Image: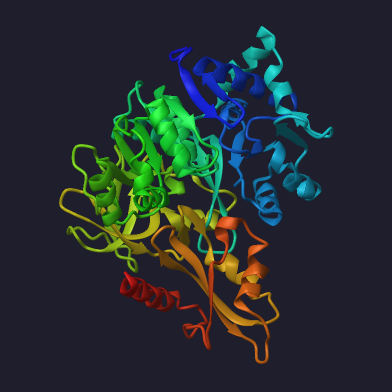
Length: 512
């Protein structure tokens, strides 16, 4: 093995610190793959994964894919209805779930196709299979040969490795089909554009259930032979301690974390961050003034990048040799980017012309799961329509202007307004409603609802928010509600969301 006994993962908890080598990860993922095959998993089956950032998560991803199966990650903040939808839509037969999240699965198992439940942790329920049992089971040479045969029949460009669910402009999340080839190509691209070497140490606090944390960070580090320090969730103080203690050199993160740094500069100055070569920011646009504050205050290099789930997720990145703070960078290697007219689709050949950004490259998805209509609308002649408005300068740097899509970006998470609206309208006091992303300095955007009440209705904005928020994951929560007389709509009845968004942006800029 190329990296052998080099440490691949460092995972600190309150109880102990674990270090897992590349050799150990390989052995454990082989055991899990064979265990899954013995449980009846076959090439092309879908296995769900509901686990926190941990060595077990990494072992599970590689064990599932080595078995020829497809991983569909679930958000650890998922609610029962959301989990049921993804499990049923993906047709998952088996799920690997953390012991503390088991109740979510247990409550909906009988309404899904799940046949078996594998649980990580101690004291697992009797009706489940302990992950540790599968990882501790030795296999004969003849059994291990099964993996070699599977490797020979897997087609990297055709067979799926990850089925990543992402929000769209309609009410239901879509499964993005990412092949082995899509993922590995992006890992190589990310290694090159970030100048990653085997001597680097990467801090990974981004959730593995998100494609940024899963492929750009976790899998890229594995592919490049880099040690990664894994955090289950973000805490600024803990992140700073880990950077200092482990001499972290690369820190991929999101704007929310950098804004938190700027707002807690006295705390940051207490730690030695001199080992950091640079910080990578992605997930949502980062204000140039925040980048400048990080650079001027802490003397750290910030490279902004851009991507989307449908591109595995990398599209563009600021090259270390020339960073433009206002830009998300230049296209990845082997990646083409164009600006097209949002109505006609005609290519805008002149620099600085605003239009929709479209992308073509080997990292672009195979399509949407069981959704050929959406696939053909989103990918045409291998060009991916991003739904983002942008322009490109003479040096091929991409500048994002706005989003054509109506999704909300909260701390890097994607939220569908229609999903929140469909819940809010069920309240007996609500006659009409609309949800938008309100600009927020820390989160990027927060979900804000505009509500028209029925005549003589008696309710409060707190009651309305609670009515919706108890049914959804915490990150989707409506954080502000305004009672209005009318929702702006087109003659056909479509919500004119742009009017509401522009009004909120004007208020935001007046306050700054």
